[in-house]
Length: 198
Image (tube, rainbow, N blue to C red; front, top):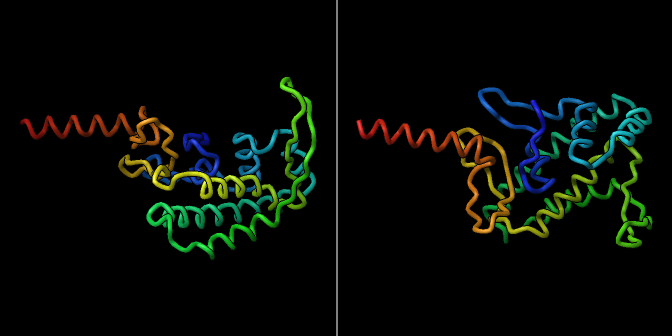
C-alpha cells in the first residue's frame, strides 16, 4: 500500500503511517528500510542521504529506529487525542517527554544562495539511526505549539483511522478524502434514504 500524505501537516502524515483501509491494518514503518523510504517520500530526507545513513548505521540500527518510531507514533496519537479534547490541560509530562526526544537530535546552520538571495537554513545532523526521527518530532512540536487543536481531526469515515488538519476556509472538512471516505459516506446515506423510502 502507498504512503498517504493527506494530513495537511507532516506530524499528522506521520500518524497516518498506520491505517485501516478495510479489514486489515496497514503498517508503513514495518522495519528500518520502510522507515527510511517513508522519510524520503515525506521529504524529510533525500534518497542519497538515506542510502548514506543506511550504510553508516546498518539495517539493525534502523530496525530499532523503526520500532521507536512506532512507539512514538502511538504516544503522539494518544497525546493529540487528549490535546484536542482538552487543549488547556496540563501536558507537562508529554512536553518533557517530547523535549527529551528532541534533545537526541542535532542540527547545524548554513547559508545558501537562492534566486531570492542569501538564506540561512537549518540542516539536521544524524549521529545515530534514531536521530532520523528528529525532523518528525520537530513537526509534532510545531503542530501543538502553532495549530488550533479544534482543527486537528480524525476522519468521520466509517472505520477510517486517518488524521488531518482542517485547513479549509470554512473549517468543515470531515473526511480524509472527499473521493474515498466522503464518497462512501454519500453512497451509504443515499442507500439509507432509499431503504427508508421503500
